[in-house]
Length: 320
Image 1 (cartoon, rainbow, N blue to C red):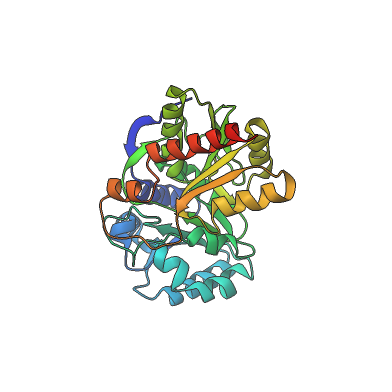
Image 2 (image 1 turned 60 degrees about the vertical axis):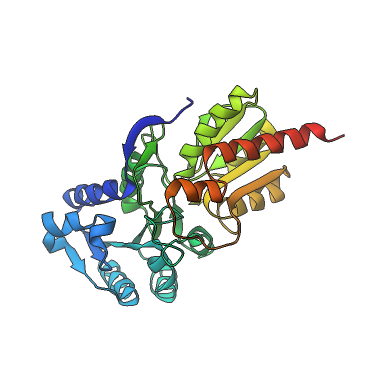
């Protein structure tokens, strides 16, 4: 497998459609919205299944409290809001009312990362993986594309305990055969390689695969490992990728602190010391700009990923 497929789709559209599918499959599913349904596409539920849609308004702390109560009654509440609000404004309620009792609340953080439609740094959440990964009992999933969103939601609905689902805003290309063999806790090799492993998550995995094609033109063989589940991490897949290549580049639309790069470094330091370079947002907030500008500015576009990978390989070759 090499280049991404030409199919273009938005993760939030898949989110709205899959909510309807889940409701048709499971009468326990409800949606609680934080007054952002027209942006997250949960408004489809409000139109098609109004009896299963609860508009909670701009009151995220109350939203989580209500969801926790519903979960204790055996229901499966799906929370719909922007990642910046769902992770931060109600963090105490998520921690105490949801994570500590390990309730089956599903938190869908839309508009994650930098590409949020020029909303600017107030609405760009680039540390959510770090926050949620550090919380006991929380499962953290970051699908690559719309197809994988559907499979991740189906799995999350049946998963015991809370799940944080990281979603992006805009349409973008997908991965080959995305989502068909999805399972929480399982990573997937998108491409074999011998010179280094690019370990990526979320939409960044699409750009990592494109970067591998650029590297191949330079004679560099890159293994690409897509990691849709940040927690629990597929440790054996990461260890195998490191063993097969001897060097690792992590790539994510997230801070370099505490996200996928942090998880990979923690694992390899403990079990298989390996040279690692973390590619991500360099401990700063975002800004309002077009998608291509932001990807270029923060070094996340495919050519930047390829350049960082080539530098890592060349540094290793230069060692005595």
